[in-house]
Image (cartoon, rainbow, N blue to C red; front, side, top):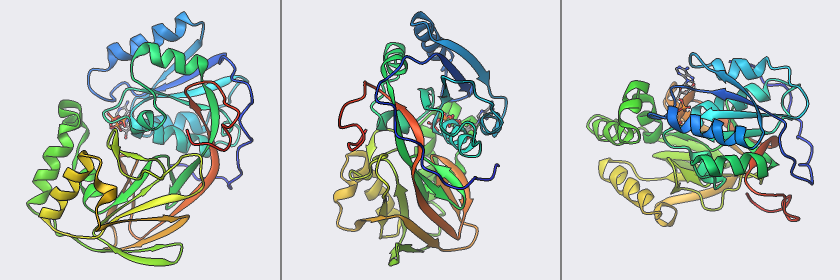
Length: 323
Ligand SMILES: Nc1ncnc2c1ncn2[C@@H]1O[C@H](COP(=O)(O)OP(=O)(O)OP(=O)(O)O)[C@@H](O)[C@H]1O
């Protein structure tokens, strides 16, 4: 893991979208299920459009972060994370640790299981859409979250969902995809001890059975968790599930599936920039779908931390509007 340099906002996005000259792809070859063909399709579509590609495959966990942290970029480079949200998370942490690469735009080539960031920016996973995205997109400054020093782009969570993430191993995820999470949820329900957590959100205290600190709107794919969250804004949305117990987990899960979770009376959403979470020491926290920290935790917002490549041309209201 690499240490973070001091925060400094990235400069505003360029006013004109330019065709990228060079795409440096950090590629996780084991992301998702049977994604080799999809990746070959992405490369073919990009080459057809004249994009110069350098393909850097990872060989193990942590590789993507190390590669990007030691990168000496040439001008006009766009860094692309080809994989799932875990790979994107590593690339982001590598960029944030590398002062000479931090201002490079970050694009994503979705190959993962959930692809939550792709859903957030409205990117479809077919080759044609990805080609259009790279050649017709533009860079937008976005906020990142940081949990105990580690950056995340979509969300960090504590409680039942973090324990499920901790229990899902990579081979199971490769075999079953999203079903691996369903299976582990049902197994965990049999023996979970339902600890409680004490949150301080910009000084306001609230007790939680589970909590998700959201930078983006979606969770686990296209499931709506925090409708008011916006990657371009400095605030984080803290979604607090207040009730414990097996029945409640199933109820919250069903509500999430049907887009109703934010409407439940016992789900509270607070807007905050600094969140402290206390609970049983050593309990896992997930961020962007991987376990990245343990309790106690401090989560904070880092506005304008990174330039994310998003689909479509620059609009005049781009700087003020959401993605
Ligand atoms: N070559 C590799 N071998 C083993 N693990 C890797 C390799 N490259 C990256 N990883 C790790 O694999 C994990 C899962 O990858 P990733 O998140 O990209 O795919 P996914 O889990 O299928 O997708 P998603 O996160 O969208 O559900 C990440 O934590 C990443 O650090």
